[in-house]
Image (cartoon, rainbow, N blue to C red; front, side):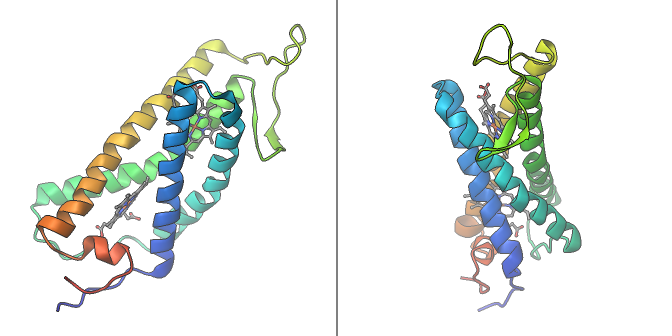
Length: 186
Ligand code: HEM
Ligand code: HEM
């Protein structure tokens, strides 16, 4: 049995907390927009803003402790693909909340965390209960960014998960097990 370096518990926990948050928010976001479930919008924003705490911690932790790659037999092209997928996934954890906040802010809805307002809404004085957009074209741009970044993250995740499963089932190495807390090669 080959021994491989373990991944630090904080690194693993932060990966899985942010991963679950991103997967949940993606599913929730697509569901609520497609079926126009307005009641979920404030919950989506509150959960996403809370997830930003874990995202910030993760990025800071990653900066302190750069990723230690496993010694790999993969071709330079495959290693480059994995590296870029990781980089883009890390960037997506910033691009999604920033584009979401821009959209909610510019559209005049504002946002907050479970009732604690962080950015106030812009009420329409002519129509009680409605809000006024600060800038319609920027609002549409931010909305499109949030939506198309979402599709891009799904594509990256399919690649990422396929890569993890290939390591486990085809290469039979410990990449996935190590991320789950195991340290020995199966
Ligand atoms: C079922 C879902 C997931 C599985 C099975 C999975 C699996 C893994 C595995 C096995 C690694 C270690 C790769 C290595 O040692 O080279 C890894 C790393 C990584 N994962 Fe995931 N992952 C999942 C979801 C996600 C999500 C949702 C994100 C972010 C949006 C994400 C972002 C990353 C990043 C950025 C790394 C590189 C490590 C780092 O730079 O911090 N993963 N993942
Ligand atoms: C943190 C990660 C986040 C993820 C993964 C995420 C994901 C998504 C996705 C996939 C959609 C569906 C897009 C569409 O089909 O139009 C969506 C919609 C939405 N998100 Fe997020 N989101 C995040 C953060 C945020 C934040 C921080 C806010 C605001 C504070 C926000 C506000 C919204 C709003 C208002 C919509 C509805 C857009 C529409 O009706 O067109 N999101 N989100």
